[in-house]
Image (cartoon, rainbow, N blue to C red):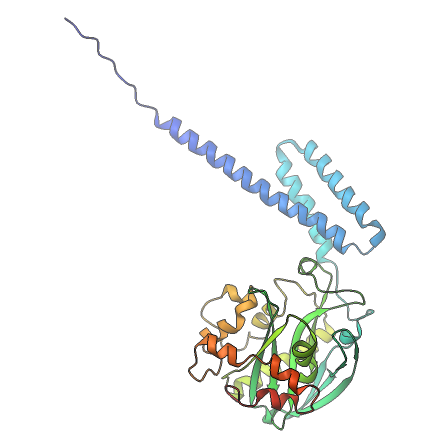
Length: 349
């Protein structure tokens, strides 16, 4: 009896590779489409937010959307290129927007600091020292202050936490001895009626400002008057020569901003990334970039990990608890010795 044998023909290797190629093309097209969608959503938002003719911003945004849909419909196989070109047109316009020092500014940021150097002496103009009655009620006061660079002995790091783990604000204060402290806070510059918005910070709504201030202003405002802001004060272990170099870099940037204003940006040019890029370019750099520079709510922990703070051997959690100054700062109030009193008995002081 003769049996019938069946044979299975193996699948062609080409059919499997063809499927993979198709899958890769679909995934690539999906990814490119998603990126182009995000880019053009940003373009619409940029037109709406940064259009200088407020009464026409809705009109211009609508025109862009209609034009984009029309061009994509007519572009056929070149739809992706059409989307990219439309985005580039808006990006070119957006990049052409220039910041200016002239404007109607809120009183607390009405003046920009600048400095003059004569040998060992440095005069910083427009140092802010507002007298606060509440967070929003204050008498603005500005003065010129002269320091001897040779008296500069240390830099202190104030860190402000807003109750959100991933968001904070650093302030650097320079100690010239004899209870002379000059603090620098990198912030967004506001016009009357403006408040900070992280979303608007991605567009060109705020200029960048370096505030030079008395600690009774820039620190006491946060410890005594603003709600939900907790302030921690650390002594850095930088030697005097590095501190002087750091201070002079601040001074150089102050004068640069006076002549060449810059935009604030929530990611690329904020209170921390500006400090890390411009101000640290002449100082020893860490081996690796850290996400804590961007999500800066744990910036003090990063400095602890990198050995930049005086710790007296304490674990970070205990050190941070001891350096929390809000309760004591409130008892000090408006004392002229505010800076000395908030440092008394703390680690490194």
